[in-house]
Image (cartoon, rainbow, N blue to C red; front, side, top):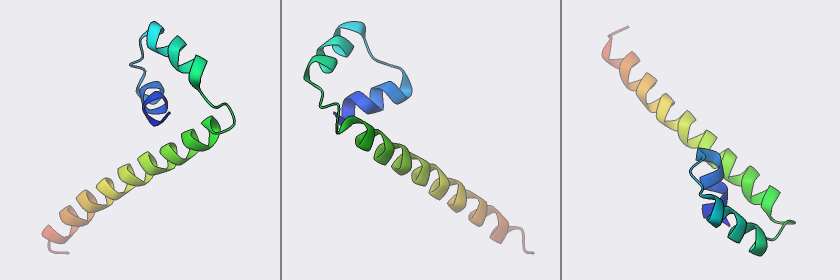
Length: 62
């Protein structure tokens, strides 16, 4: 289910795989998995940006 949600986030799903996944998906868990993965991706992006900005600001000498 995680692979299905990640593929839908990035839009790289083939129609045959999409239909096969919809036949086997648990519709109750799908929104929870999607929200958790969206939060994880958001935190990952925030952390990378924080590391880049923190590294740049300390090297300027201000």
